[in-house]
Image (tube, rainbow, N blue to C red):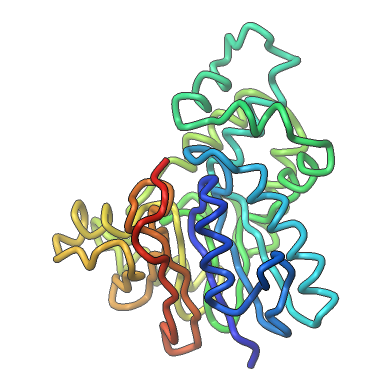
Amino acid sequence: MRPLWVVGDIHGAYDKLRALLLRAGLIDFDGAWTGGDAHLAFLGDYVDRGPQGLEVIRLVRNLEVQAQAAGGRVTALLGNHEVMFLAALVFRQKDPGDRMGFRAYWLENGGQTRDADLLEPGDLGWLSSRPAMAEADGWLLVHADSLMYLRMGTTIDEVNAEVARILANPDADEWGLFLNWFTERMAFALGEGEVKARRTLSVFGGDRIVHGHTPVYVLMDEALHGRTLGAGAPVPYAGRLCLAVDSGMAYREDAGFMARLNPGGIAEVVAFPHGGPVY
């Protein structure tokens, strides 16, 4: 079985991402793929908050191509911040006065104008084609700890097709509703979370859910009422059916990790050394 690595929300923390991938042996010092047949899954939120979202996008795009050529695989999911970013760009021409509020919403949530100014058509097309869900080695890969996906289809393919339809049709009402759904979080930690996790897995398949979206220290403090393990560890919860891997790397100096998973759970964690930049 090929190694499966997962990375949560990056939010423009390009230097931290490169350091983590290098320590995991997935890239070299030039940023080229060295992971062989490994499967590297990014769970979305490449942009906003941190200053180098565009560099993150370009790195992930390059690794996607290089990994495939080497017999490996890169999966890059859609996060809610990609939808915010796309909405600010797509509706800019239709609504130059931003009466719909998409640009203001993006900026209020850490939008970086540099990313928008330097984005090229290929980057835009790539972002617009990101899938919302995937499955690998018994893990259901999603961005958000939300029941949103259940509202959009009954299979992974159906959900991805519905998301692609929305992103290909700039209807302000649909985009606004999609963004509202995508802000939901902690579905599997509050109010019979384990039951909701089992329901999600029964619909889409897989034995466990791995997600980003909610930083691990927020999840521990606000929902699980447990002792925070610092910012350097993924958090299994909901009867170990769920694994939270958003390290909050763009929020905290001591944050940043990625995890290698196997069908039984966490096989390895690579953490960023303390002392990195905070955005």
